[in-house]
Image (cartoon, rainbow, N blue to C red; front, side, top):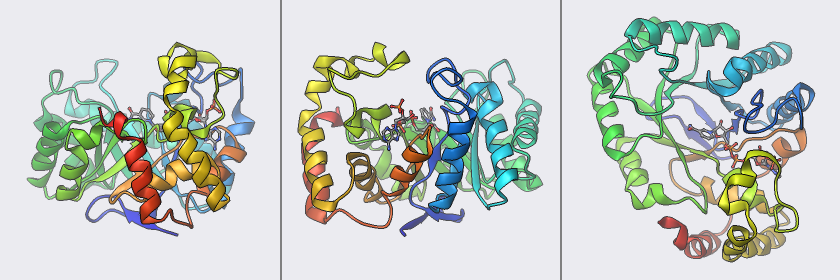
Length: 314
Ligand SMILES: NC(=O)c1ccc[n+]([C@@H]2O[C@H](COP(=O)([O-])OP(=O)(O)OC[C@H]3O[C@@H](n4cnc5c(N)ncnc54)[C@H](OP(=O)(O)O)[C@@H]3O)[C@@H](O)[C@H]2O)c1
């Protein structure tokens, strides 16, 4: 199984994690109505069973529910997992003390003594200076309550600045978590992937299945339910535009005896320094996504997918 490290000296993890935004989130994903705790508990155990250890959450997912569920599932399973969570300054927590308190609150919900990876959810230097924010995170590393620092949704300039400030404390910037999939490749065009490689920052690719679009299960006849119906990409015209990529995913899935999701994730795994974190709501989805590990597309196939998805570089 391919493993990658979280930043220059972070832990080595299998090159695919799992995202848990949908665990407890009622507003976007419909937790509690379309699926519930039993399904996401089964997803947790299936992921662990398949060797996945990196679980991505955030204090804001389900207003703490995602962290609480992860804490509970981990206690039940006793399996070692690598927990990554995120901080945002809402509601008005804009001081170094507030950051350290937020970490303590996440530790309590996650029922752990140290968080493997603590990420800043979005850039917000207009609310709190980067010096204050990253100074507080460096303090938390020194206290041992977080082991590595990451950012999310940072552009190249913001990422370089965060890296630079943390370096003054001898703390590496371990990851930048950004939207990245075969049909969201702007991070390549913007030079973010290249800059992350230069600085030894791992890219955690969020929405790597484009919220289900790359699984092939959504068609004009079978649209998703819930918030995604508002997204033009899920409407008939949007779905039709995806055909060059989805047809190739289908072909490669047949060649390898895999699914389209596994091929789409394997393409991301083939990118140097990139770890996809697909969301899964059920054991079936978690097991299927873990099946993106343990095999590889050929270099020609990786190149063919790159070519077919060039319109999505913009
Ligand atoms: N940092 C940020 O700002 C940010 C933003 C977004 C996400 N994230 C993180 O990234 C993670 C993943 O992103 P995401 O949830 O937006 O999108 P995603 O991983 O591209 O898509 C997840 C959704 O696709 C469907 N799915 C997943 N695996 C499947 C499979 N094998 N077969 C069929 N359907 C499957 C499920 O929804 P259905 O079954 O309903 O189709 C699932 O909820 C999140 O959980 C979160 O941890 C971070």
